[in-house]
Image 1 (cartoon, rainbow over the protein chains, first blue to last red):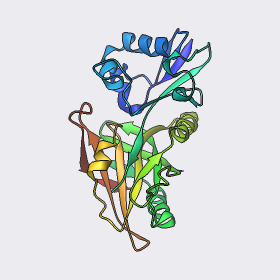
Image 2: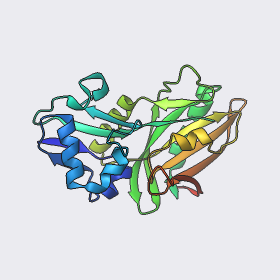
Image 3: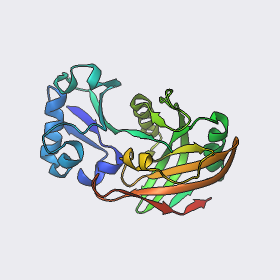
Length: 91
Length: 143
């Protein structure tokens, strides 16, 4: 099983759970399983045309999947996926 | 409301003085209790916007992943973020709002004038999603 850490602002759409466990072979499958279990998460993670929102960072263990094989990145049992919305700003 | 100890509050402000004339940034950890964000620890972060640090900040998501993991081990969640505005009011900008995505969390801004922290304000990011999010001023309760 793969554990997905849900960031604080999205927990209300995931049954208030801080983590969700899914069975998946890739990051795409893991996220797909996540939004299948918790459909309200979909619009917060994806645009209307099904792309991950630009400010949503997805980490497999300690690696940004953008620098791996993106959503095609393989996941194995015991891996952890973290969903991390961006933090930025300035005057 | 943001509930924070004086030590943590002073730490946020001191960070802004140390990085002046650049913006500082960091994470607030603790517990979300309804509409109260109770801060139990403060984590300094680096500002990756080395191209424009005097008026922009960005926290490396890798740092967030580490801070989240360490917070989890202590039973803490991310409840907000802080940054400073060198020689500029402690009010959110359009950039601050556009780049704010952690709905339900607090965004704390400290004005640092000529190297000294002056006003610190906190804003709760409210709304249901990106289309109606707002930064709303909230009380800071010092404990």
